Length: 270
Ligand SMILES: Nc1ncnc2c1ncn2[C@@H]1O[C@H](COP(=O)(O)OP(=O)(O)OP(=O)(O)O)[C@@H](O)[C@H]1O
Image 1: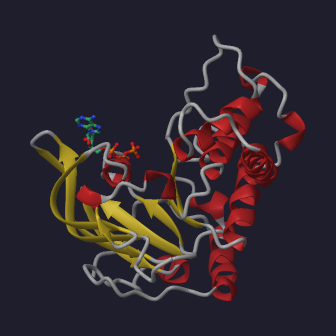
Image 2 (image 1 turned 90 degrees about the vertical axis):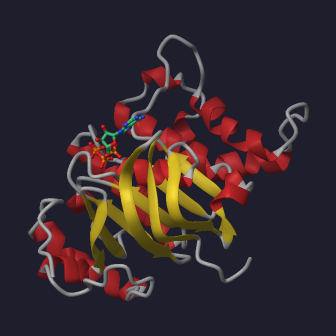
């Protein structure tokens, strides 16, 4: 593996046909970072994540994934994606394990059946989301929060180098939010890099190492959780270099968020 950042945006813009939604955003994610991407509805968070996946249009600036320009990037399995709204159909009978196994498909020729190694990776992914004991169940029988974990396991089954998650805790009750946060915390402890779009920062306390806040297509805060709670420090816009807190640092900083959860939108400028 090279030392290139996992994700690097320099004045990058994304949108749809001729409409620019994300405008001139600069952002660099290094290995091991867990970034919460915050911002009001419509500020462009999903469009940014989709841009990295080639699902929204790259309209300007530079975007590199693992050191490769977006237009030339072909190693898609290195980027795991957990979409915003799950679409696990209730009309087709499919087990939890079968869904997670589909995460392995991009990694082998379509005609080759799964190997013992594939099965071991699927086991590990199911363990990571604490659903191994439910693997034979019909996925439609699971709650929304559990289905979200199935989708995280499916993404993990591809053994990605970074996981992009769009509102993993949205619409999930508090008890299941806690379980999901534990799952994400376990992944973070294992060094999994994540970019998590969320409106529920407090639910992710102890997981996030950095906060990036978008507003109307721009980044208006990029810094540590501690700086975010203070509201001013870490305001280094357009600067690829930022302070990445260590694992030791991230917990005390986020402890403040548990007692004093912040709304995701008010970030003082300047
Ligand atoms: N497929 C699309 N085609 C055209 N415009 C779109 C499309 N998807 C989103 N948009 C527009 O892009 C803007 C940003 O949407 P986006 O989903 O990126 O915001 P968001 O910050 O993720 O919002 P939320 O918090 O509500 O999920 C919105 O004005 C939206 O209407």
